Image (cartoon, rainbow over all chains, first blue to last red; front, side, top):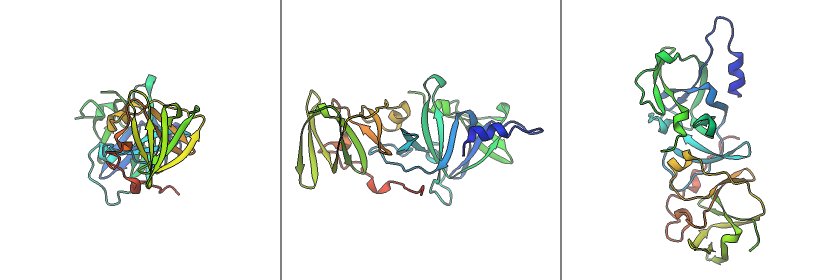
Length: 152
Length: 115
């Protein structure tokens, strides 16, 4: 699933342009900025790093490059869902544009492309968790992937 | 030793080290002992020696990796379709050390569910 190209086609008449990819991570729905999403693939083979924190599942190979894979549910402290096998890896760019890094996010599911108005996001920490917003009757966590790649 | 990189496996993961940093390699029981020279020298332990590759493209360790895995490493690479952690000969990782190599090894947790 090439999300970037599909998003370009979804801008039809009478529809709001999609801004985020909605994914399921445990019991939470999270909105990832579409511009940062490179691809959605079935779970990649992950090689654990000894001594890594729980958020870091390990390393995978993607497109001939080594890529860290983080568990999105653990990143957002989501309670595990009924079937926590994380069958989907969302490949994203993190960090500032001039120094962006490729990263995999292990998720339960990629749901849909949605429109999240900037003004609807509230109560975030100003960092990775930009805030929360109502989307189709559900409160979703809106994430700032640029913040995830920052040092410090 | 010749140029290139020695590839080894420990705890299910693949590790690489510049051949020029390796002073010796010996079998010790079921494991292998690799002697590293230089100022940060010491011994490393491996479950398996895969061999030497002449070339590896090494990527620097990304900040996001350092954030969640605060261990010394010279970078990351790919061999075949498997990621490789490059060892910094001046700062040997605990996961490969003789004393601490059992810590955090999770070889059975590898996920291969993308068939």
